[in-house]
Every structure is written in C-alpha cells, then in structure tokens.
Amino acid sequence: MSDISIRKEGKAGRITLTRPDALNALSYDMCLEIDAALIKWAGDDDVALILIDAEGDRAFCAGGDIREIYEIGLSGDHTRAQEFWRDEYRMNARLFEFPKPVVSFMQGFTMGGGVGVGCHGSHRIMARSSRMAMPECGIGLVPDVGGSMILAHAPGRLGEYIGMTGARLAPGDAIHAGFADYVIPQTEWDALKVDLIRTGDPNHIDEAQVPPIPGNLSAMQPMIDAHFGGGSLGEIVTSLRAEDSQFSENTLELLGRNSPLSMACTVEMLHRMAGTRDVRASLELEYRFVYRALEHSDLVEGIRAAVIDKDRNPNWEYDMDNLPQAEVEHMLAPLGDKQLTF
Image 1 (cartoon, rainbow, N blue to C red):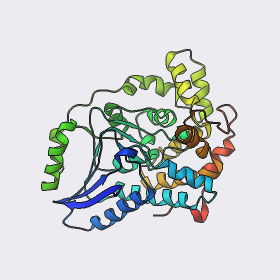
Image 2 (cartoon, helix red, strand yellow):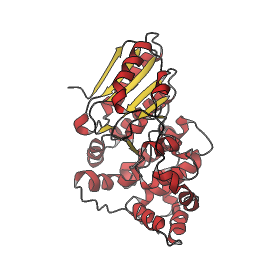
Image 3 (cartoon, rainbow, N blue to C red):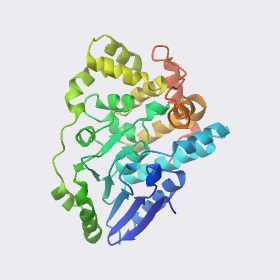
C-alpha cells in the first residue's frame, strides 16, 4: 500500500497522507510525489484548489521520517539526507508560493515536517483537539521546512519560545502564532471537503469556523517577551535564571532537555528572518544547518535518545553555559556551491 494518495476529484487536487500507523511521517518518496503533483496542477485548469488531509485520528503528520535520517547518519554517507532536505524544502516553497488556494485539514498532531505540508497553504484548518509543535531542538535539529519564517513573525517573542522549547500549541495559540487560520469542528470536515471538491471555492470555510479558545501562550506572553528578547541563548538563559518564578523554573527545565547548539542556532535564525517573509530565504538558511547536521551537530545523538533507544538521556556536545558562538556561526555559514537553490 502506498504511503500517500494523490488524485483529482471534482475541482480539487487531492493529497492524502496514508501512513496512520507511522503518524503519517513524511518519507523522501512522499515529498517527491507531493512536489510532482504541485508542478502538474499549477497549470491544470481543471484544478481550482488543493486539498491536503491525512488518514487516522492521531496525527495529520508528526514530522519527517527521522528513523530514515538516523540510518543515513550511521552510514557515513550523508548525501541522501542532504538530498531529502533539499527536495523537501523545494516542495515547501512550492506549496507556499502555489498560485491557487491550498486547504489543509490538520487533525491530531502536526509537528516538524508536517508543518511544511500543512501550514504553508492559504486555508489552514485545525479541530479543537488538534495540537501543533516544532520540537526539532529536542532531537538536535532546528525548526525547519520554512517554520523559522513563521516563528520569526509570531507576536512578540513567541517564536523564540516556541522554537526553543518545542511547546505544543492548542488551536488558539497556533492561530495566534501564525501556524493556522481556522478552528472547525471535526464532525463538519467531511461535508466541507465534499463542498470544496464540488465547487472549488474555499469561501464556505469562513462560514464553518468557530471562535478559537485563547491558548495558554497568550496569557504567558508578557513573561515570554520579558525573557526571550535577548540576542543569544546565553542572554535568554541568564534572564530566566535571574528571576525566581514558576515560569522561569519551568522554562529552564524545558530548555535543559534540548540541544544547546540547536537552540542557539534557532535564536540566530529567527533574528535573521525577522525582517523578511521570504520563504526561500528561510529555507536556504535552514538548509545550511541541516546540510551539516549529521556530521557537526547533535542530531544523530538526539534521534538515538528520543526514538531509537528511547532513554531520553541525550549526551549533547555542549551545555547552555559553554557553547562557543563560533559554532553557531559555523552551522549557519553560507554553503557556497552547495547552497539550496530552487
């Protein structure tokens, strides 16, 4: 059975992720199939919009297939992983720039690579029970698939907080932070999809939405803004340590689980992206990190601890107090003729 179903129905180009037992994790082949469909449908007058959904209740897409990345990392030949990210990012850019409406239905969890499929469209739908996160720093990666651009433009310092901690966002927070547009009861999704396929008109989505419940991050925003405005990981940690509060204690615990190199690079990336909404610029910057990741970052160790051995005890190369800024500059330095192109 295929991991993805791509077809035309009525006036819609349909993309359905069909790996529910693997939480619809994105494989390299799935990325290539999505990209090929987008190229074909961009100029197809029979396709009025794109409809993206997924099978199963637990996840729209829980991220990229990191087991696949881990095996490549152990092999010593990182070329296939670099190609995976290159082609995935090109697909992310094509979705963001697609000339027709792109409607995504995101049930359960949408994380990491799932954000790159579900959150670059024009109509991004969640259910009340949906949750979203960019937990890459927990495995030694950085928020990618164009997620750094979304985070960089979240209100206040929410982007730094979400990217560094991997916080899970309820729909209200996801909409507030820029990852989604609508909350629609999941019981109404099937009828809405039928309407979209029949009409090719996404305007009825507005009529189906319900008000999002304000999330926890909105209430925490003053504290987040007070501490996450520093220019580096070190400054943020110093600010949190200087305050005796439950928020600071909880946040330091969250940061203490994640790769210091990844968090420091995340801060730098978001600051660089703050002045632009150019998805290609964000993907090119992200690619600098991931191109080097299997050889020079905590990624292999992070996947080992989280997914392979599941001991949740990664041995990060640095801690939050001894990370040289030169390592951040190295991971984000231009790649020359290896840079991501579109």
